[in-house]
Amino acid sequence: MQHIPLRDLLCEKVPETPSLPRIRISDNNSLLMPHVGCAASMFQNDSKFRKPDGKQAGVPSTTDIRVNGAAKTADDLPSAPLARLRLIAALDALLSAGSVSGAARMLDMSAPAMSRLLAQLRQQFDDDILVRSGRLMVPTPRAVALRAQARRISRAADALMQGEDDTGWHTTAQRPDAVPVPNPPPLLTQTTWRDTPNGTDRDARTTDAQARLARLVAVAGGGPGRARTLRMAEAQEAFGTVLRGEADPVQIGALLVALQSRGMTAEELAGCVKASREGRDVSLPMRADLDWPAYVSPRNSRLPYFLLAARALADAGHRIALHGYAQAISQFGTVLDTLHIPVAGSRAAAAAHLASARIAFLPLPAIDPQLQAMTGLYPLLDMRSAINAVIPLLNPMAAPISVVAVASPGAARLCLATAAMLDGQLCCVTGHRDVVQATPHLAMSIHRSAALRDSDIYVASDPMRVRPRMPPGYNTREFAASLWSGDLKDANAEAIVCDTIACGLLALSDSHMGFVQARDEARDVWLRRGWGGA
Image (cartoon, rainbow, N blue to C red; front, side):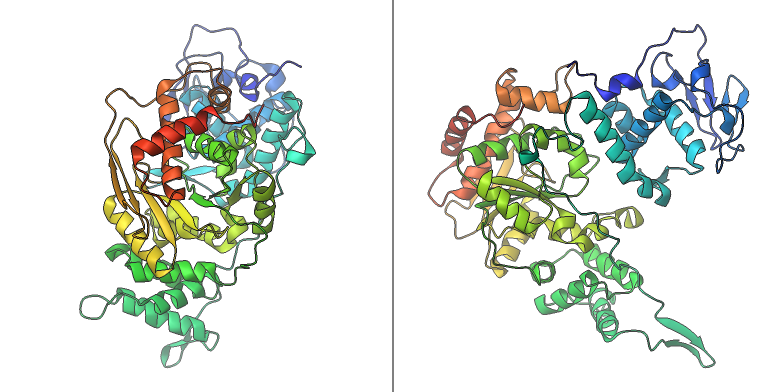
């Protein structure tokens, strides 16, 4: 069966025209279309994509979209099924990438073409879809409500073209457990203050937990002469109140900003991690050998070489537990599929996958839905917070050691001190802030818990290596599959994979192994890898 990628449907060629139309959108942004012939012009001069006579219910005609000076109304929006499918694919890409340029790269089209589709979507749904917040574009509440449905339709279309079932997995035995999409946890609570004849007073509905949290927020952020760092038990109580949904939204923001503004201490971080682990069932039928947090920013465009390294270590007999944001499934889900890394909907399901496949990816909502909801506060704060420091240390599958990415040696010392307070072991690697992924073309340092010998290792950059680029004509899935199968030889890409495997081996080893020996063993692991994908 011939495979026609969904992006090809978005780039159906039409005859070029000599003029270059200018599109003016109602928010006064001007876009000059550099070419005609891709999705940017798919509704222009094509009557089969125009809406039939009569207005569509619920879509106003006041949005001002002009092409060559002529106003277009809601009647001009597409009604043909193929045109609507294009809009759905564009919506899915925009919400996944979080930017016009990123969505354009995902669908192999120009940024102006994607801007035209965004304008069509805005008019179709009478909603901005994406709005600017600082340097980022964030989805509107309406867009968030549409995200899951757009993702399902887009994935089902791709699966249909590839002759798969609608999950994207070739057999039911390989299908991952369904990852539940929980209702938003109770981050917002009822009003806790009231106006009385004598002024403003605390409402009786204010809980004791909120009163205790208020005192702890005052301790952490009370200003010069009043503030001090929280003790571990205090941080555990404060963060636990938030995770149980008992905090007022103002208290949540105040706590996160207070901890972030002066920097968390090891005691505070350890207390927050302990609160995140509270109530966890410790009687797992199968535990991981290595915990591998992978909380990759949606804005990060690097290829996920760490997934090839983790899969190779699993083939070598080690049980690897990956965990990350929920959007990772759409961010690099095709690579998870290709490498047959199952996605688990619960810790119990992850344990079953560790027993059968020796590897599993556990999304954050399956670990703690409240933590996933709190990561959504980033656009409101426009900065990283205590949440970003806590989630890499969750270790949901109770592995004896975690391999954690850090931004600097100072961050590594904080994490190592935190792990010591929690009786855990860490191997921290600098270079890639979001996930352990080696950088042979750049220097990196490896810092291990004091219980491990040779705790600090410096790895110099290799002058023979450069940051690899994906060859023309490949998408991320095809590139990963070709590297894994050996059909594509890329020395720079394989160096990243092998050095990342070496980082994992250093974490798993309790001997005097240095990085040179680990790299040699990693090359053997890579050469002996099994083929887990199609």
